[in-house]
Structure formats: structure tokens, C-alpha cells
Length: 309
Image (cartoon, helix red, strand yellow):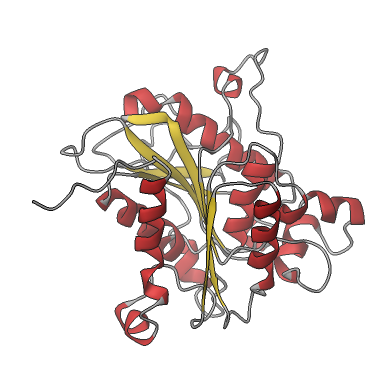
């Protein structure tokens, strides 16, 4: 989500904490002695993550979604497209891991690809590594992203995510392949007029090669073993052309990948879960989150809903 006047608000939530009720002390701390901040890799005190776990009453192990907030690779909508999603997923017995990843702007010290992808894959591997102590099913760890965060979630699917069995770091010996993907009004292509130019610029600069643009265009790179994908956007999105999502759906159809694509008629870009007033204005679009839960049940990520007695 791009918010013209909300930069300070977004920045105020940019450091992500592991919930104190469920500390994961073996994850490296951003600052020695500070149990609130957890980094993804040694020497990187920018990239980190916050872990939201369902209530203890939910039977373990639970599925997990590693969440990448949007913001055109320049800022992060940490709450609206991160922590809010995680809290919603918790209600349905899904852990939410919200990731602060490198950015291509002043706020992110002008990082570029592959730094974003490296952070995303590291977050997936860490979640898989510490799954037993967190009560997470290591075989049901997916990704979720909105806008540019949706593109990053997509890169986690299409780019090389194999483990390195010879790595000195045991985390790197684990696969970074997601088991499912939830993509909300995502940036998809880096090519042509359909590309979201600010996201592309922040990710790969102003003069990227045609080869790099193609390599990072999700619709060009869907693998044969792509996990199930839930995908939605709106016709009224004027920020990220909805054709991005159509292009991705065509690519998923060509590979016979299990997926569901919903193109809602109404609603602007960056709605997240929709506020009460937005839900009243766009009631059909507001149903996307429940459709997502339904899809996860259909794919076996979540158990079937108990029948009413």
C-alpha cells in the first residue's frame, strides 16, 4: 500500500517483535540484550520479523503464513497489510509471521534485488527451522503479500528456493519453498506498461536490463511445482493495473496449478481487510478474506469446517 501522508505512521511500526508470550530465544537478536527484536541474518539489523501465534487453545501444530506488507518496495504498510492480517489468521488457527524486508528507498537505505528475496527466503527458512518450538507444521508454511509484498511473495514461489545441504548454517539447509500463497492485488510483471513503475524502480533501479525484468516477472516464471495460489484484485484498482493479476492467472492455468482468482468489481488499491466503512461501501470485496479461508480449507491447509449440529 502506498500512503502519501502516512510515512511516519508506517515507520513507527517498522521494527517487528516476537510476541513475548512465545519467545523464540534462539533466533538472533537485532541488538544484544534486547529480547524484542529478532533479525533474519547475522549482521543485518534492518530485516526482522514478528511472530503472531494463535491462542494456546488451538491444537498444535498449526499452519503459518509468512507475510510481506506492501508499499512499492519503498515503505511498509506494517499494520494494515501485516499485523492486521496476522491477527485475522490467528482467529482461524494460522500463525502469522510479519516480515520487515529491505527497501529500495531512503527508508531502506536504497537496497536492491536480490536483498528483498534473500530476506523473504530467510524468513521462510527460519519459520521452518523453529517450527517445532513454535507449534507450527513445517509442511504448511505459506506466503502472503499485498501489492509489492505480493510480488515478493510471488518471487518466493518462482525463484530458486531449494535447500543447500552443504551450508554451514543449518537454517540454509532447509527449503524456502512455500506450501501455499495468498496474493492480494499484487504487482506481478516488471515488463511493459502494465508494470508498476515505482515498485520496479525501487526493486531493480531505473534502467534494469530486459533480461532482469523478465526474470522477475512472475507470469513468466511459474514453476511446474508451484503451490496452490489464492489471488484477488479489483477492476477499480488504479495503482497496480488489475491486468497484472489476470496475467498471473493465465500463467497458473497453463501450468494447471491449483488456484482461485477473484476479480471484484469495486474498490481501490490497498484496502487490506477493509475498514468497517469500506466494508459497507464494498460489501462484495470485503468477503475476500473469508473466501481465502475457504480456499485454504479446500487445499487441506486448514481442516474442514466442522458441520453444524
